[in-house]
Amino acid sequence: MYNYKITVSYDGRDFSGWQRQENGIAVQEVLEGAIGQVLGHPITIFGSGRTDAGVHALGQVASFFSTSLRTPTQLIRGSNSLLPDSIALLAVELMPEDFNARFSATGKKYSYDYLVSPTRLPLLNWRSWWVGPKLAWDKGSKCLSHLVGEKDFSTFRSTGSPTKSNVRKIFSATLSSPEVNIMRLELVGSGFLRHMARAIAGSLYEVGRGRIDPNDFPSIIAKGDRKLAGFAAPAKGLCLREVYYHPISENNL
Amino acid sequence: MYNYKITVSYDGRDFSGWQRQENGIAVQEVLEGAIGQVLGHPITIFGSGRTDAGVHALGQVASFFSTSLRTPTQLIRGSNSLLPDSIALLAVELMPEDFNARFSATGKKYSYDYLVSPTRLPLLNWRSWWVGPKLAWDKGSKCLSHLVGEKDFSTFRSTGSPTKSNVRKIFSATLSSPEVNIMRLELVGSGFLRHMARAIAGSLYEVGRGRIDPNDFPSIIAKGDRKLAGFAAPAKGLCLREVYYHPISENNL
Image (cartoon, rainbow over all chains, first blue to last red; front, side, top):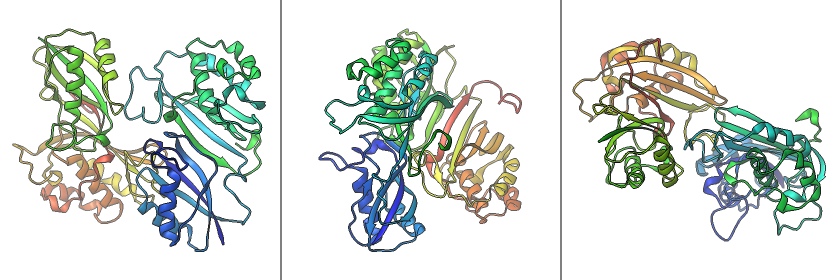
Protein backbone atom coordinates (compact mmCIF):
# COMPACT_ATOMS: atom_id res chain seq x y z
CA MET A 1 0.00 0.00 0.00
CA TYR A 2 1.23 3.46 -0.83
CA ASN A 3 0.49 6.32 1.50
CA TYR A 4 0.04 9.53 -0.47
CA LYS A 5 0.20 13.03 0.99
CA ILE A 6 -1.43 15.67 -1.22
CA THR A 7 -1.46 19.45 -0.98
CA VAL A 8 -4.63 20.98 -2.34
CA SER A 9 -5.92 24.48 -3.05
CA TYR A 10 -9.57 25.39 -3.52
CA ASP A 11 -11.90 28.31 -3.98
CA GLY A 12 -14.44 27.72 -1.22
CA ARG A 13 -17.29 29.54 -2.96
CA ASP A 14 -18.43 26.56 -4.94
CA PHE A 15 -18.46 24.03 -2.11
CA SER A 16 -20.37 23.04 1.00
CA GLY A 17 -17.03 22.70 2.79
CA TRP A 18 -14.32 20.05 2.94
CA GLN A 19 -16.34 17.18 4.30
CA ARG A 20 -19.19 15.30 2.67
CA GLN A 21 -22.55 16.82 3.64
CA GLU A 22 -26.16 15.99 2.99
CA ASN A 23 -26.54 19.12 0.89
CA GLY A 24 -24.11 20.58 -1.59
CA ILE A 25 -20.86 19.32 -3.04
CA ALA A 26 -17.88 18.76 -0.74
CA VAL A 27 -14.27 19.33 -1.79
CA GLN A 28 -13.36 15.89 -0.45
CA GLU A 29 -15.78 14.00 -2.68
CA VAL A 30 -14.75 15.91 -5.82
CA LEU A 31 -11.10 15.09 -5.06
CA GLU A 32 -11.88 11.42 -4.35
CA GLY A 33 -13.67 11.19 -7.69
CA ALA A 34 -10.86 12.70 -9.76
CA ILE A 35 -7.92 11.03 -8.01
CA GLY A 36 -9.75 7.69 -7.85
CA GLN A 37 -10.23 7.87 -11.61
CA VAL A 38 -6.50 8.46 -12.15
CA LEU A 39 -5.56 5.59 -9.81
CA GLY A 40 -8.15 3.23 -11.21
CA HIS A 41 -9.91 2.43 -7.94
CA PRO A 42 -12.07 4.25 -5.36
CA ILE A 43 -10.20 5.97 -2.55
CA THR A 44 -11.02 7.59 0.78
CA ILE A 45 -9.22 10.84 1.55
CA PHE A 46 -8.43 12.04 5.06
CA GLY A 47 -8.04 15.80 5.37
CA SER A 48 -5.89 17.58 7.95
CA GLY A 49 -9.20 18.92 9.19
CA ARG A 50 -12.51 20.21 7.91
CA THR A 51 -12.99 23.64 6.47
CA ASP A 52 -16.46 25.20 6.65
CA ALA A 53 -18.61 25.98 3.64
CA GLY A 54 -17.17 28.99 1.81
CA VAL A 55 -13.70 28.80 3.40
CA HIS A 56 -10.80 28.83 0.93
CA ALA A 57 -7.57 26.84 0.99
CA LEU A 58 -4.17 27.65 -0.41
CA GLY A 59 -2.47 24.62 1.15
CA GLN A 60 -4.91 22.11 2.62
CA VAL A 61 -3.22 18.73 3.16
CA ALA A 62 -4.83 15.31 2.92
CA SER A 63 -3.67 11.71 2.76
CA PHE A 64 -4.97 8.44 1.34
CA PHE A 65 -3.86 4.87 0.73
CA SER A 66 -3.69 3.26 -2.68
CA THR A 67 -2.38 0.06 -4.26
CA SER A 68 -1.50 2.01 -7.43
CA LEU A 69 1.86 3.70 -7.83
CA ARG A 70 1.90 6.98 -9.74
CA THR A 71 4.58 9.66 -9.94
CA PRO A 72 3.67 13.04 -8.46
CA THR A 73 3.57 14.52 -11.97
CA GLN A 74 1.22 11.80 -13.23
CA LEU A 75 -1.13 12.25 -10.29
CA ILE A 76 -1.08 16.06 -10.44
CA ARG A 77 -1.57 16.34 -14.20
CA GLY A 78 -4.15 13.58 -14.38
CA SER A 79 -6.21 14.85 -11.45
CA ASN A 80 -6.03 18.53 -12.36
CA SER A 81 -7.30 17.81 -15.85
CA LEU A 82 -10.37 16.15 -14.30
CA LEU A 83 -10.91 18.62 -11.46
CA PRO A 84 -12.98 21.81 -11.85
CA ASP A 85 -11.15 25.17 -12.02
CA SER A 86 -11.99 25.74 -8.35
CA ILE A 87 -9.84 22.81 -7.06
CA ALA A 88 -6.28 21.78 -7.86
CA LEU A 89 -3.61 19.41 -6.60
CA LEU A 90 -0.42 21.40 -5.99
CA ALA A 91 1.91 18.70 -4.65
CA VAL A 92 2.08 14.94 -4.07
CA GLU A 93 4.46 13.04 -1.81
CA LEU A 94 4.80 9.38 -0.84
CA MET A 95 4.91 9.01 2.95
CA PRO A 96 5.73 6.32 5.52
CA GLU A 97 2.74 4.14 6.38
CA ASP A 98 2.13 5.83 9.72
CA PHE A 99 1.65 9.30 8.24
CA ASN A 100 -1.84 10.71 8.61
CA ALA A 101 -2.74 14.19 7.35
CA ARG A 102 -4.79 14.88 10.48
CA PHE A 103 -2.96 13.17 13.31
CA SER A 104 0.57 13.92 12.10
CA ALA A 105 -0.14 17.66 11.74
CA THR A 106 1.71 19.89 14.21
CA GLY A 107 -0.03 23.14 13.29
CA LYS A 108 -1.88 25.26 10.78
CA LYS A 109 -1.70 28.75 9.37
CA TYR A 110 -4.94 30.58 8.64
CA SER A 111 -5.41 34.03 7.16
CA TYR A 112 -8.47 36.22 7.46
CA ASP A 113 -8.79 39.03 4.89
CA TYR A 114 -10.76 42.19 5.65
CA LEU A 115 -11.56 44.44 2.68
CA VAL A 116 -10.96 48.04 3.81
CA SER A 117 -11.84 49.96 0.62
CA PRO A 118 -14.57 52.68 0.67
CA THR A 119 -16.84 50.48 -1.49
CA ARG A 120 -17.06 46.74 -2.08
CA LEU A 121 -14.62 45.53 -4.74
CA PRO A 122 -16.01 42.58 -6.75
CA LEU A 123 -12.56 41.26 -7.69
CA LEU A 124 -11.71 40.96 -3.98
CA ASN A 125 -14.97 40.68 -2.01
CA TRP A 126 -15.43 36.98 -2.87
CA ARG A 127 -12.40 36.16 -0.68
CA SER A 128 -12.57 38.95 1.89
CA TRP A 129 -15.04 40.57 4.25
CA TRP A 130 -15.86 44.17 3.36
CA VAL A 131 -15.64 46.22 6.58
CA GLY A 132 -14.88 49.65 5.06
CA PRO A 133 -11.96 52.00 5.73
CA LYS A 134 -12.89 53.28 9.21
CA LEU A 135 -11.81 50.50 11.56
CA ALA A 136 -9.14 51.35 14.17
CA TRP A 137 -6.59 48.66 13.32
CA ASP A 138 -4.13 49.99 15.89
CA LYS A 139 -6.61 48.88 18.57
CA GLY A 140 -6.90 45.44 16.98
CA SER A 141 -3.11 45.15 16.92
CA LYS A 142 -3.01 45.68 20.70
CA CYS A 143 -5.01 42.47 21.18
CA LEU A 144 -2.76 40.19 19.16
CA SER A 145 -0.14 39.45 21.81
CA HIS A 146 -2.89 38.28 24.17
CA LEU A 147 -3.84 35.57 21.70
CA VAL A 148 -0.35 34.06 21.63
CA GLY A 149 0.44 31.16 23.94
CA GLU A 150 -1.11 27.94 25.22
CA LYS A 151 -4.59 28.83 26.43
CA ASP A 152 -8.13 27.65 26.82
CA PHE A 153 -9.84 29.24 23.81
CA SER A 154 -13.44 28.42 24.82
CA THR A 155 -14.27 32.09 24.28
CA PHE A 156 -13.87 31.60 20.55
CA ARG A 157 -15.35 28.11 20.32
CA SER A 158 -18.56 27.59 18.40
CA THR A 159 -21.38 26.57 20.73
CA GLY A 160 -22.58 23.02 20.25
CA SER A 161 -19.17 21.65 19.33
CA PRO A 162 -18.05 19.39 22.17
CA THR A 163 -14.31 18.68 22.27
CA LYS A 164 -12.17 16.92 24.86
CA SER A 165 -10.12 20.02 25.52
CA ASN A 166 -10.40 23.62 24.44
CA VAL A 167 -6.71 24.26 25.05
CA ARG A 168 -4.76 25.19 21.93
CA LYS A 169 -1.43 26.91 21.37
CA ILE A 170 -1.23 30.00 19.18
CA PHE A 171 2.34 30.52 17.96
CA SER A 172 1.78 33.82 16.21
CA ALA A 173 -0.97 36.34 15.49
CA THR A 174 -0.32 39.26 13.14
CA LEU A 175 -2.19 42.02 11.30
CA SER A 176 -0.67 43.41 8.12
CA SER A 177 -1.62 44.74 4.71
CA PRO A 178 -0.11 42.43 2.07
CA GLU A 179 -1.89 44.22 -0.77
CA VAL A 180 -3.86 47.42 -1.43
CA ASN A 181 -7.29 47.48 0.31
CA ILE A 182 -6.66 44.25 2.24
CA MET A 183 -5.97 43.98 5.97
CA ARG A 184 -4.90 40.44 6.82
CA LEU A 185 -5.07 38.65 10.15
CA GLU A 186 -2.69 35.70 10.17
CA LEU A 187 -2.85 33.02 12.84
CA VAL A 188 -0.49 30.10 13.33
CA GLY A 189 -1.62 27.58 15.91
CA SER A 190 -1.24 23.98 17.02
CA GLY A 191 -4.89 23.57 16.14
CA PHE A 192 -8.11 25.54 15.95
CA LEU A 193 -11.46 24.92 17.61
CA ARG A 194 -14.54 25.01 15.42
CA HIS A 195 -15.10 28.60 14.17
CA MET A 196 -12.21 29.80 16.35
CA ALA A 197 -10.34 31.69 13.61
CA ARG A 198 -13.54 33.35 12.42
CA ALA A 199 -14.57 34.25 15.99
CA ILE A 200 -11.16 35.87 16.57
CA ALA A 201 -11.57 37.76 13.26
CA GLY A 202 -15.05 38.88 14.36
CA SER A 203 -13.74 39.97 17.75
CA LEU A 204 -10.95 42.08 16.22
CA TYR A 205 -13.62 43.70 14.03
CA GLU A 206 -15.59 44.59 17.17
CA VAL A 207 -12.42 46.00 18.72
CA GLY A 208 -11.73 48.03 15.57
CA ARG A 209 -15.18 49.59 15.57
CA GLY A 210 -15.09 50.33 19.30
CA ARG A 211 -17.54 47.74 20.61
CA ILE A 212 -14.85 45.85 22.52
CA ASP A 213 -12.17 47.71 24.49
CA PRO A 214 -8.73 46.27 23.70
CA ASN A 215 -7.92 46.49 27.42
CA ASP A 216 -10.75 44.03 28.10
CA PHE A 217 -9.38 41.50 25.58
CA PRO A 218 -7.24 39.48 28.06
CA SER A 219 -10.14 39.04 30.47
CA ILE A 220 -12.53 38.16 27.62
CA ILE A 221 -10.18 35.32 26.67
CA ALA A 222 -9.72 34.28 30.32
CA LYS A 223 -13.45 34.13 31.11
CA GLY A 224 -14.13 31.59 28.38
CA ASP A 225 -17.61 32.99 27.71
CA ARG A 226 -18.56 32.84 24.02
CA LYS A 227 -21.06 35.69 24.48
CA LEU A 228 -18.32 38.18 25.41
CA ALA A 229 -16.46 37.77 22.12
CA GLY A 230 -17.47 38.95 18.67
CA PHE A 231 -19.57 36.91 16.24
CA ALA A 232 -17.92 34.57 13.75
CA ALA A 233 -16.77 36.65 10.77
CA PRO A 234 -18.07 35.49 7.35
CA ALA A 235 -16.48 32.28 6.03
CA LYS A 236 -15.41 33.80 2.69
CA GLY A 237 -12.61 35.85 4.33
CA LEU A 238 -10.93 32.76 5.79
CA CYS A 239 -8.19 30.82 4.03
CA LEU A 240 -6.26 27.75 5.23
CA ARG A 241 -2.79 28.68 4.02
CA GLU A 242 -0.54 25.91 5.30
CA VAL A 243 -0.50 22.75 7.38
CA TYR A 244 2.70 21.97 9.27
CA TYR A 245 4.22 18.55 9.96
CA HIS A 246 7.38 19.54 11.81
CA PRO A 247 7.85 20.71 15.40
CA ILE A 248 6.82 24.38 15.44
CA SER A 249 8.48 27.14 17.36
CA GLU A 250 8.38 30.89 16.93
CA ASN A 251 11.67 30.61 14.99
CA ASN A 252 10.63 28.35 12.14
CA LEU A 253 7.28 29.80 11.02
CA MET B 1 -31.71 66.19 -16.83
CA TYR B 2 -28.66 65.05 -14.90
CA ASN B 3 -25.83 63.31 -16.71
CA TYR B 4 -24.23 60.74 -14.43
CA LYS B 5 -20.80 59.19 -14.95
CA ILE B 6 -20.29 55.94 -13.03
CA THR B 7 -17.20 53.83 -12.46
CA VAL B 8 -17.97 50.14 -12.12
CA SER B 9 -16.05 46.99 -11.24
CA TYR B 10 -17.21 43.48 -12.03
CA ASP B 11 -16.14 39.87 -11.90
CA GLY B 12 -16.75 38.74 -15.47
CA ARG B 13 -17.28 35.09 -14.63
CA ASP B 14 -20.95 35.46 -13.89
CA PHE B 15 -21.90 37.44 -16.97
CA SER B 16 -22.38 37.11 -20.72
CA GLY B 17 -20.43 40.34 -21.13
CA TRP B 18 -21.20 44.04 -20.77
CA GLN B 19 -23.92 44.34 -23.37
CA ARG B 20 -27.38 42.81 -23.38
CA GLN B 21 -27.36 39.47 -25.21
CA GLU B 22 -29.97 36.94 -26.18
CA ASN B 23 -28.46 34.42 -23.79
CA GLY B 24 -27.10 35.00 -20.31
CA ILE B 25 -27.14 37.99 -18.04
CA ALA B 26 -25.30 41.17 -19.09
CA VAL B 27 -23.57 43.51 -16.64
CA GLN B 28 -25.37 46.46 -18.23
CA GLU B 29 -28.86 45.14 -17.52
CA VAL B 30 -28.05 44.22 -13.91
CA LEU B 31 -26.74 47.76 -13.37
CA GLU B 32 -29.75 49.34 -15.08
CA GLY B 33 -32.05 47.37 -12.80
CA ALA B 34 -30.33 48.33 -9.54
CA ILE B 35 -29.61 51.98 -10.35
CA GLY B 36 -33.06 52.45 -11.87
CA GLN B 37 -34.59 51.18 -8.63
CA VAL B 38 -32.58 53.70 -6.59
CA LEU B 39 -33.54 56.56 -8.95
CA GLY B 40 -37.18 55.55 -9.16
CA HIS B 41 -37.39 55.25 -12.95
CA PRO B 42 -35.95 53.05 -15.72
CA ILE B 43 -32.63 54.16 -17.19
CA THR B 44 -30.45 53.27 -20.16
CA ILE B 45 -26.72 53.02 -19.49
CA PHE B 46 -24.06 53.71 -22.11
CA GLY B 47 -20.76 51.96 -21.45
CA SER B 48 -17.34 53.20 -22.58
CA GLY B 49 -17.35 50.04 -24.69
CA ARG B 50 -18.35 46.41 -24.54
CA THR B 51 -16.38 43.79 -22.71
CA ASP B 52 -16.69 40.16 -23.87
CA ALA B 53 -18.22 37.38 -21.81
CA GLY B 54 -15.85 36.47 -18.98
CA VAL B 55 -13.77 39.67 -19.13
CA HIS B 56 -13.35 41.46 -15.79
CA ALA B 57 -13.40 45.17 -15.02
CA LEU B 58 -11.70 47.14 -12.30
CA GLY B 59 -12.73 50.53 -13.69
CA GLN B 60 -15.31 50.31 -16.47
CA VAL B 61 -17.02 53.67 -17.00
CA ALA B 62 -20.59 54.28 -18.13
CA SER B 63 -22.99 57.21 -18.29
CA PHE B 64 -26.75 57.74 -18.18
CA PHE B 65 -29.32 60.52 -17.95
CA SER B 66 -31.82 60.86 -15.14
CA THR B 67 -34.36 63.38 -13.89
CA SER B 68 -33.61 62.31 -10.29
CA LEU B 69 -30.86 63.97 -8.30
CA ARG B 70 -28.93 61.76 -5.87
CA THR B 71 -25.63 62.33 -4.11
CA PRO B 72 -22.79 59.99 -5.10
CA THR B 73 -22.99 58.36 -1.66
CA GLN B 74 -26.74 57.76 -2.00
CA LEU B 75 -26.36 56.23 -5.44
CA ILE B 76 -23.35 54.10 -4.50
CA ARG B 77 -24.79 52.76 -1.23
CA GLY B 78 -28.26 52.23 -2.65
CA SER B 79 -27.09 50.47 -5.80
CA ASN B 80 -24.41 48.34 -4.15
CA SER B 81 -26.92 47.01 -1.63
CA LEU B 82 -29.08 45.82 -4.55
CA LEU B 83 -26.28 44.57 -6.81
CA PRO B 84 -24.84 41.05 -6.58
CA ASP B 85 -21.36 40.57 -5.03
CA SER B 86 -19.90 40.34 -8.54
CA ILE B 87 -20.75 43.98 -9.48
CA ALA B 88 -20.21 47.24 -7.61
CA LEU B 89 -20.38 50.98 -8.22
CA LEU B 90 -17.07 52.52 -7.15
CA ALA B 91 -17.64 56.19 -8.02
CA VAL B 92 -20.32 58.57 -9.27
CA GLU B 93 -19.88 62.02 -10.79
CA LEU B 94 -22.29 64.56 -12.31
CA MET B 95 -21.07 65.63 -15.74
CA PRO B 96 -21.87 68.34 -18.31
CA GLU B 97 -24.67 67.38 -20.69
CA ASP B 98 -22.33 66.61 -23.59
CA PHE B 99 -20.34 63.95 -21.70
CA ASN B 100 -20.72 60.44 -23.07
CA ALA B 101 -18.82 57.50 -21.56
CA ARG B 102 -18.04 56.12 -25.00
CA PHE B 103 -17.47 59.13 -27.23
CA SER B 104 -15.69 61.27 -24.63
CA ALA B 105 -13.17 58.52 -23.80
CA THR B 106 -9.58 59.23 -24.83
CA GLY B 107 -8.15 55.83 -23.99
CA LYS B 108 -8.28 52.62 -22.00
CA LYS B 109 -5.96 50.50 -19.93
CA TYR B 110 -6.28 46.73 -20.14
CA SER B 111 -4.30 44.10 -18.26
CA TYR B 112 -3.86 40.48 -19.24
CA ASP B 113 -2.75 38.11 -16.47
CA TYR B 114 -0.85 34.91 -17.24
CA LEU B 115 -0.55 32.37 -14.40
CA VAL B 116 3.02 31.06 -14.45
CA SER B 117 2.94 28.61 -11.51
CA PRO B 118 3.85 24.92 -12.03
CA THR B 119 0.22 23.90 -11.40
CA ARG B 120 -3.10 25.71 -11.74
CA LEU B 121 -3.94 27.80 -8.66
CA PRO B 122 -7.71 27.95 -8.00
CA LEU B 123 -7.51 31.25 -6.11
CA LEU B 124 -5.94 32.86 -9.20
CA ASN B 125 -6.93 30.83 -12.26
CA TRP B 126 -10.42 32.36 -12.43
CA ARG B 127 -8.84 35.70 -13.43
CA SER B 128 -5.71 34.52 -15.24
CA TRP B 129 -4.67 32.11 -17.95
CA TRP B 130 -2.51 29.24 -16.72
CA VAL B 131 0.47 28.91 -19.10
CA GLY B 132 2.97 27.29 -16.73
CA PRO B 133 6.46 28.42 -15.73
CA LYS B 134 8.38 27.68 -18.96
CA LEU B 135 7.56 30.60 -21.24
CA ALA B 136 10.46 32.80 -22.39
CA TRP B 137 9.19 36.17 -21.21
CA ASP B 138 12.38 37.92 -22.31
CA LYS B 139 11.36 37.12 -25.90
CA GLY B 140 7.87 38.51 -25.30
CA SER B 141 9.37 41.68 -23.86
CA LYS B 142 11.29 42.26 -27.11
CA CYS B 143 7.97 42.57 -28.97
CA LEU B 144 6.43 45.23 -26.77
CA SER B 145 8.08 48.29 -28.32
CA HIS B 146 6.75 47.24 -31.75
CA LEU B 147 3.21 47.51 -30.44
CA VAL B 148 3.61 51.13 -29.36
CA GLY B 149 2.54 53.89 -31.74
CA GLU B 150 -0.27 54.74 -34.16
CA LYS B 151 -0.72 51.72 -36.39
CA ASP B 152 -3.16 49.64 -38.34
CA PHE B 153 -3.83 46.74 -35.95
CA SER B 154 -5.77 44.54 -38.40
CA THR B 155 -3.44 41.69 -37.47
CA PHE B 156 -5.07 41.52 -34.05
CA ARG B 157 -8.64 42.27 -35.13
CA SER B 158 -11.28 39.61 -34.74
CA THR B 159 -12.48 38.43 -38.13
CA GLY B 160 -16.06 39.39 -38.89
CA SER B 161 -15.93 42.68 -37.02
CA PRO B 162 -16.14 45.46 -39.62
CA THR B 163 -14.91 48.85 -38.45
CA LYS B 164 -14.33 52.08 -40.37
CA SER B 165 -10.66 52.10 -39.53
CA ASN B 166 -8.32 49.61 -37.89
CA VAL B 167 -5.87 52.32 -36.91
CA ARG B 168 -5.42 52.71 -33.17
CA LYS B 169 -2.72 54.26 -31.03
CA ILE B 170 -0.98 52.21 -28.33
CA PHE B 171 0.62 54.52 -25.75
CA SER B 172 2.34 51.85 -23.71
CA ALA B 173 2.79 48.07 -23.59
CA THR B 174 4.52 46.46 -20.62
CA LEU B 175 5.15 43.03 -19.11
CA SER B 176 5.76 42.79 -15.37
CA SER B 177 5.09 40.57 -12.38
CA PRO B 178 2.94 42.52 -9.91
CA GLU B 179 2.45 39.50 -7.65
CA VAL B 180 3.84 36.00 -7.15
CA ASN B 181 2.97 33.59 -10.00
CA ILE B 182 1.41 36.31 -12.18
CA MET B 183 2.95 37.79 -15.34
CA ARG B 184 0.94 40.81 -16.43
CA LEU B 185 0.69 42.39 -19.86
CA GLU B 186 -0.55 45.96 -19.59
CA LEU B 187 -1.73 47.90 -22.62
CA VAL B 188 -2.80 51.54 -22.77
CA GLY B 189 -4.35 52.59 -26.04
CA SER B 190 -6.63 55.16 -27.65
CA GLY B 191 -8.99 52.30 -28.33
CA PHE B 192 -8.98 48.58 -28.98
CA LEU B 193 -10.41 46.60 -31.87
CA ARG B 194 -12.59 43.62 -31.08
CA HIS B 195 -10.48 40.87 -29.41
CA MET B 196 -7.34 42.98 -30.02
CA ALA B 197 -6.01 42.83 -26.44
CA ARG B 198 -6.62 39.08 -26.25
CA ALA B 199 -5.02 38.50 -29.68
CA ILE B 200 -1.92 40.43 -28.54
CA ALA B 201 -1.86 38.35 -25.33
CA GLY B 202 -2.17 35.17 -27.41
CA SER B 203 0.61 36.29 -29.74
CA LEU B 204 3.00 37.00 -26.86
CA TYR B 205 2.22 33.50 -25.57
CA GLU B 206 3.22 32.08 -28.97
CA VAL B 207 6.42 34.14 -28.85
CA GLY B 208 7.15 32.88 -25.34
CA ARG B 209 6.78 29.24 -26.33
CA GLY B 210 8.85 29.68 -29.50
CA ARG B 211 6.12 29.45 -32.13
CA ILE B 212 6.60 33.08 -33.24
CA ASP B 213 10.07 34.58 -33.59
CA PRO B 214 10.24 37.97 -31.88
CA ASN B 215 12.19 39.26 -34.87
CA ASP B 216 9.18 38.54 -37.08
CA PHE B 217 6.85 40.54 -34.81
CA PRO B 218 7.18 43.90 -36.66
CA SER B 219 6.40 42.33 -40.04
CA ILE B 220 3.49 40.34 -38.54
CA ILE B 221 1.97 43.64 -37.39
CA ALA B 222 2.75 45.35 -40.71
CA LYS B 223 1.17 42.62 -42.87
CA GLY B 224 -2.21 42.96 -41.21
CA ASP B 225 -2.97 39.26 -41.66
CA ARG B 226 -4.94 37.82 -38.73
CA LYS B 227 -3.68 34.30 -39.49
CA LEU B 228 -0.06 35.26 -38.77
CA ALA B 229 -0.76 36.30 -35.17
CA GLY B 230 -1.60 34.10 -32.21
CA PHE B 231 -5.13 33.07 -31.26
CA ALA B 232 -7.18 35.19 -28.86
CA ALA B 233 -6.12 34.31 -25.30
CA PRO B 234 -8.95 33.21 -22.95
CA ALA B 235 -11.27 36.03 -21.84
CA LYS B 236 -10.84 35.33 -18.12
CA GLY B 237 -7.27 36.74 -18.08
CA LEU B 238 -8.40 40.13 -19.39
CA CYS B 239 -9.36 43.06 -17.17
CA LEU B 240 -10.44 46.58 -18.15
CA ARG B 241 -8.54 48.57 -15.55
CA GLU B 242 -9.22 52.20 -16.43
CA VAL B 243 -10.94 54.46 -18.95
CA TYR B 244 -9.34 57.83 -19.60
CA TYR B 245 -11.11 61.13 -20.35
CA HIS B 246 -8.14 63.49 -20.60
CA PRO B 247 -5.61 63.95 -23.41
CA ILE B 248 -3.15 61.04 -23.05
CA SER B 249 0.56 61.21 -23.61
CA GLU B 250 3.37 58.94 -22.49
CA ASN B 251 3.92 61.31 -19.56
CA ASN B 252 0.55 61.15 -17.83
CA LEU B 253 -0.27 57.46 -17.78
